[in-house]
Image 1 (cartoon, rainbow, N blue to C red):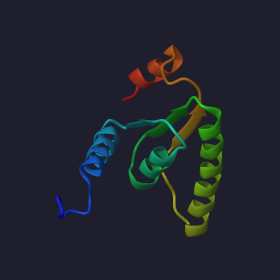
Image 2: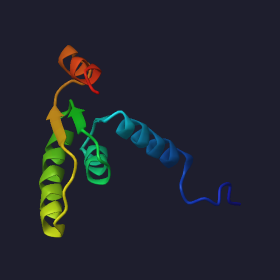
Image 3: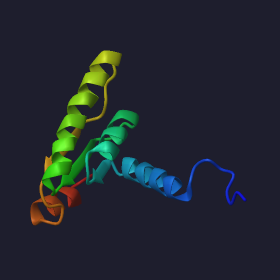
Length: 103
């Protein structure tokens, strides 16, 4: 028995709403391998999409994903909003100050 015939799950709807709200704030923050940051940079006119990841392995994948993202942008002749993927601790004062200064 199907509980929801809509192919978009509630979790996906929540994530989409979050991205829209962040885009309106002109800031996107994320952690992980950079997928959300790159998606927001590619699909919205945002001032800065910003991602910070603490762990070494996801950072390694984020670098590879960034290189592929740039390659695909060049291949298709597309542009994107500015974005930054960094390794660090999202809870440190440096990062919280940057986020609080967002327009």
